[in-house]
Image 1 (tube, one colour):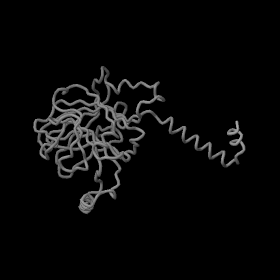
Image 2: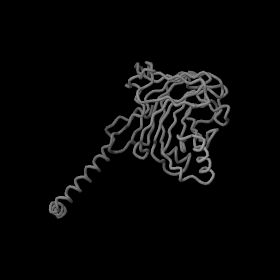
Image 3: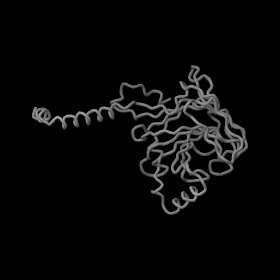
Image 4: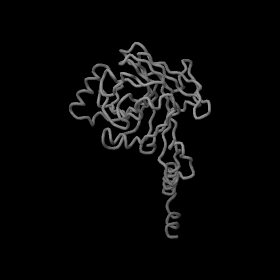
Length: 272
């Protein structure tokens, strides 16, 4: 009762401040349980067939680009829109920018399917750095935290005209022969760490649901807590091996972790 009386006796301005704090706490507590990063199943197609809001990520020295297009395919017994990626000795990604707090939404889930793995694919070599499917997550890492060597490398790349440099990224890939759930540096730069969530041909031709804890993966790859996520891309690439691959990508969702407050939500799809 004394607390209530004290609050009621506060000047009007302080009462407004307390109300504002209460609203902010309420919004934080009732943040949406999930955010769609790629809502392909409901996306409108652009004139070139891409899901709205997603753009081609090109590589200057690659002449043949991977082709991406929204298509209808059976998923879990229902027909739904997914992204089809076709690569024939080429490479290109399909990405979007965003701002996402991995502390609030640490669970990343998606579905994908590949029609084949790459015979010459090998995550440990530059010539084998191709994948029938990958999900690329970039982080807003401050380059001022680099050590001397990485800082010099970063400044040299900037001087060469590379403005959009992924200083920290995780690549979730469908590998050919590397053990699942290992973490290894990208063959070209250790600023990008590779995580084979699938490997080999056992699940080729079937839809596979993946679920990852972004915080745990980042900690294993780089140490420390992850900075905000600033971009996501899907990519099917075969430019190094010269092979061909086709993949399908379903919705990509970032979720809050299950908790007591979320006990009324259906989390069963995370356990598929």
